Length: 91
Image (tube, rainbow, N blue to C red; front, side):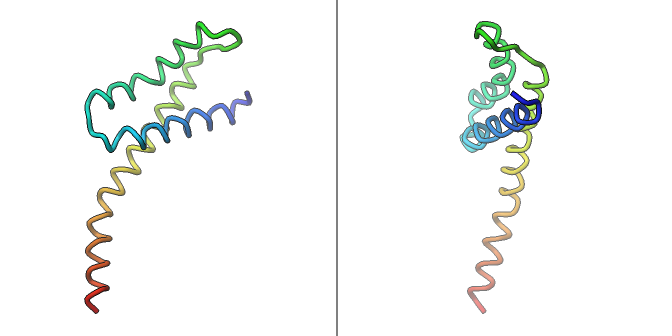
């Protein structure tokens, strides 16, 4: 795989998985999510034709971090959006 497409694949796949896990707010799921990138790379030792790479795990963590930031931002904005919608409905 091309390096750029490989990085995009790792960022986007862990981003989507994180969006599914973070709203659950269970520590077991969060720990599993944080262990997922290195576990994936360790599993590649046993898959023929695959080579583990530290940068792949790093890109996975970037995807997790982006999802966390998006969810935190949404949780901060949601009350303001609801308040604005109520204000606009009263007018």
